[in-house]
Amino acid sequence: MEGGARVVHPAVEPLSYLIGTWKGTGEGGFPTISSFSYGEELTFTHPGNKKPVIAYSQKTWKLNSGEPMHAESGYWRPKPDGTIEVVIAQSTGLVEIQKGTYDAEKKEINLQSELVGNASKVKEISRIFTLVNEELTYVVEMATNLTSRQPHLKASLKKL
Ligand code: HEM
Image (cartoon, rainbow, N blue to C red; front, side, top):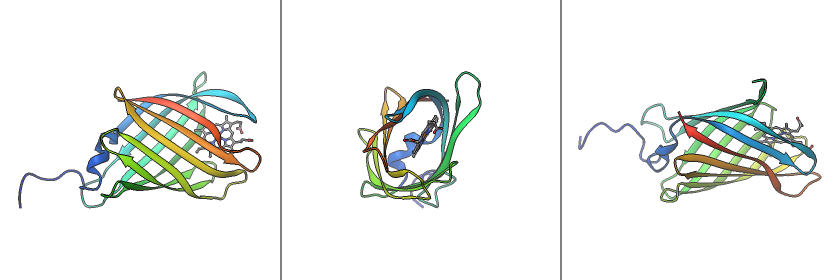
């Protein structure tokens, strides 16, 4: 064997900066709802180097009371060619298959839903994650049956 023990699968290496637990706050809105703010914690884990997968779990809460809000979890599957596939199950029952690309230098990940399932209103979801000054920020946009694609969420998180 060459070199030392590998801890990250080569496909995961370009996104290894994600691995860990991130905590912060976000703001939500949409043309049809009142805006709101929330606390959020999300965790990316890579259990060993045998599989090209990052496991993802997220939970959110009301900032004033700590009461749980939305939660979701899934798997991120980066490919060596710079594309990425993400599956997410939401606490609302909605499921997403996201396809997109990552830029390892810019530390930016762009996802666009290929499938949104079991959703009463949502037609389309996009998610952009960027690392800026060691803060992980994201923007989520969605389109519903009544509203064209608009921002729903933005948040900024620091690694714990
Ligand atoms: C409302 C979808 C994430 C909090 C909504 C609505 C939809 C939706 C379809 C109703 C909009 C309308 O009636 O026109 C989604 C999707 C998400 C997501 C697809 C993830 C991709 C979140 C998160 C939070 C959140 C993370 C909280 C931290 C809310 C709140 C409302 C709302 C407070 C308004 C009141 C309500 O319906 O409960 N969301 N949401 N959402 N969402 Fe989200």
